[in-house]
Length: 154
Length: 154
DNA sequence: ACACCTTGGTTCGAATTTGAACAATTGGGT
DNA sequence: ACCCAATTGTTCAAATTCGAACCAAGGTGT
Image (cartoon, rainbow over all chains, first blue to last red; front, side):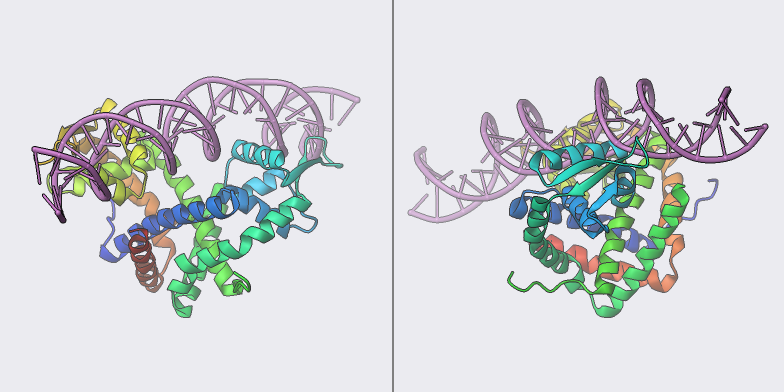
């Protein structure tokens, strides 16, 4: 770390842009979901991941990985969603330790109800603000970034 | 919201990429700063903003805006940093209600100490992973996104 | 001067997040 | 079969976050 390569103007712009944009977007999303569906963004994401899974259920650890959250954080949120009846827990046949989180009927309803507004907001804050070309580059770039970080965490 | 325009594959890739990347990056940054300098990312950002200000000080509200955080959240963090001696509070001459947060000598030292490692990590997770062209597009895109959201919040 | 609406910052309580410690299993490698 | 490291999910305490309520002080219009 003797002679750090500082960021030039463009690099700095990209970095600041990223940090600021992600904070602003997260804030807006949180507010929109909370007010229109009574869900936090994390909770919404849990429902989305479960709904996309083959049988509407995923192992806790698997789910935690997809959400990029801590195991304990997930335990907490799943418990919350369980209290609200949007998610249930099932135990895993092949592994006594394992626990499946499973989206319920009501979970589906709430998700279907919340999705349109959420998507609209996503468009409003990111997608519809950019040109198709920008979107393509963004998808590729952040895809790579994600892969690298996933790999590095292991 | 009768017929929502769902996201096509590319749009979805951009969106998922954004969410996943920002979570992963934030996690990594937090971990790196905590272990190498004992600071949270928020605290680091506070020091950066103050150090960049003309006289090393900013009004609380101004600072909160730049950090994209709530006023109460900032009050908390500034208090923490004050306890550690990295930041001080001064009152504003022209407005009795006003409070300036000001970076201290020790704050400067800690910041200088932490910066190289932080920048290295930023390169590692984002900047050096992308091509110059990708970086340019990213900077422009997220710049726009940020501006729009800032404007919309008013 | 006087109401009145806005601003600036802090305080408060509630919700959330994290990492470390833990208990119970699992799955090799020998 | 058996020992041991790695894995699973939860619990716990501590730190952080937010929004709403609040108090004090500015600024405006009459």
